[in-house]
Image: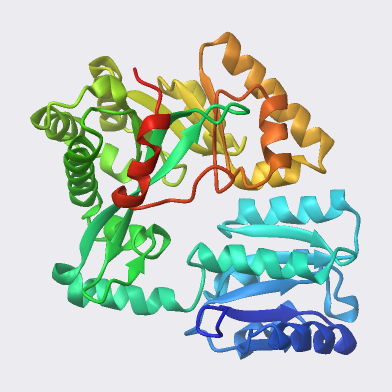
Length: 388
């Protein structure tokens, strides 16, 4: 990995030896933008125009525990994700993790200092690939000035039956591509589209392009999933326009699943009306990134969902967190009784697949089966798609 792809790293640790050790090892692995401070109180001393992945110790000795000063991580505006890196037991680290998530930090990971250094690198790499890096501001600027030059391009990822690997459906993941062929991931532009009111236009365009190339490439309709933002559901005519887009392509609405993102959960009248209209038309509704927070539980209780997707971070935690696994199992069993499908995402290893099988998941999704691919690459799985 070259240094341009790595993010900016901020190490908050009061031990100079640990600061030096971690930063040197990161630099040796190509992470050149790495700075250290000894207390959360000093966070305003860093360049606030940049975005940082913060490697955060829990106990900062004389400088006060980080969890007591967590609000400063939010107010600085420079921290977009946190890796809790502590020697404390799992239950304490998990409690700090939950505190930061509930406070509004969008992405938080937790690992023990006793784990191999490669684990820390893996977490940094995963957060970098999610777009939580200093390139976000540059992309935002480009979207504002060069939107007309960007093309929406669908990518496809298989949703398979666990164990057998038979492909049941494809999730469509929209990307933007510039004139040079550079691919821009959703984490770098979705917020901009929401803020500027262009998210529905983007969704309609993505769906229209997808249905056109799927019918051309596969020669028949296949089950597809699309992400829908709650901001769109607050538009009175969103569902009517979406259904009309699908109808114009003569694509069976029964083969369409709409995955609602967790952010911006809304109970407005228009949200209810749009979801009911879509459900009555035959579309399947899914909760994306179901993580058992109050927001996603409320979604399940409020709206006519036929599927939940267990969040990738939960899958990773469940390997070592027995309480979490039992909660996931209980939710899965409840969904079975209510005829709600369970999809486990973030399946990257055989171990992840085994966990999905223990949960009796109906579908699995992740790099273990297939990475997101263009239609040209995805067409090779045509024969593996289950006909419906």
